Image (cartoon, rainbow, N blue to C red; front, top):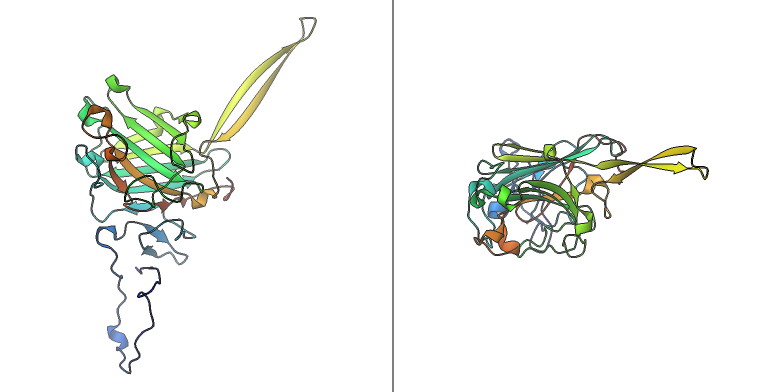
Length: 296
């Protein structure tokens, strides 16, 4: 494994000349140290198939040609501004994002997030509730994210699984497009997902989002005589997640957990967010199979 770091002042400068040479038999290849807990928080796959750790920074600035669609943290920990209960089911560990199928007919984006403890699929009380969100930057997100200390996490679409008690509305799953400049929801663009789209296995939640939705509408026309009729069926195909400037193989993702703050155990807004995965950047989706590849 090799590290890739920015070459700035004081980093990666010219070597000091020396006549001494290390014997080839003792030469080693190591990994440059990255910042503490951020180490290995974002991975990519380069052309030769080797996985390398990438400097923690804005994913758009260090956009790779290929990605393995994987992000994980060296050690699970909570967002420092979080004021809710610190339960393992809200402490993010890793995440994945994989695109497969045909972009126009049967393509899917499969998102998974793993936390430090079992996820309660059907909460019995408010303390067991949780909201799991996959934030997506499809190209048009704001330059700076809305969360203090996490400026590199910005998005224009969210895929959400709300796991609530029946008293608080029950479980719901949806895709929602945001105002690309301020990361705020646009309620008119909310698309509900089927409960079957979400699977929970112990400490991992997986949401499969169809890339396109096909709707059919039928209209019937009657002649002036009132006897002859003709029926017309119209098929409409729309993208569930709209591209906002980037091809699908350049979309970036972050997985964050939230405790519903309406129950008085945390303030609204970013104080209800328990953890981010990756911690301070986003990771690129992996294209497993997609035809056509760069359709948006």
